[in-house]
Length: 155
Image 1 (cartoon, rainbow, N blue to C red):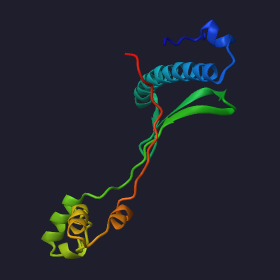
Image 2 (image 1 turned 90 degrees about the vertical axis):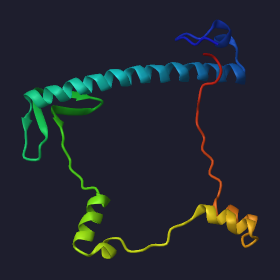
Image 3 (image 1 turned 90 degrees about the horizontal axis):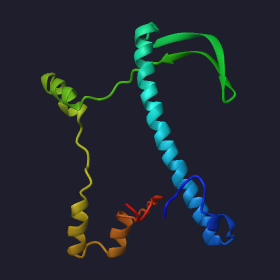
């Protein structure tokens, strides 16, 4: 089934649950395609603007780049007079470094205390040995349902 901006005349004039869903499906596919195209344009524009901000913007003490636009713009009810490519810094754990330093300083066991680790394979071994019931295994591994909305058929 081909989708376009304008639904086929038979879909427009028909008034059934099936034709209503077909119109929704056509609109969904068209909008999704437009959003993807717009996202590609937005990503490309953003990359260009990052380069511009780095070249022409003023860098602050935190490493962010800002550029005054020289006037106020209002888009979607929100006004702005400049743009900023904001830098933020977070700390992450480097466990290899912590391990190396812990061993050098003889404090490894304090940095890496022993902890119980769940062994999923052992659940099935215990089940095979009759020490766990199927109901208990199901409690340990509850089902999780994931839904997704996808196109089917076609090319």
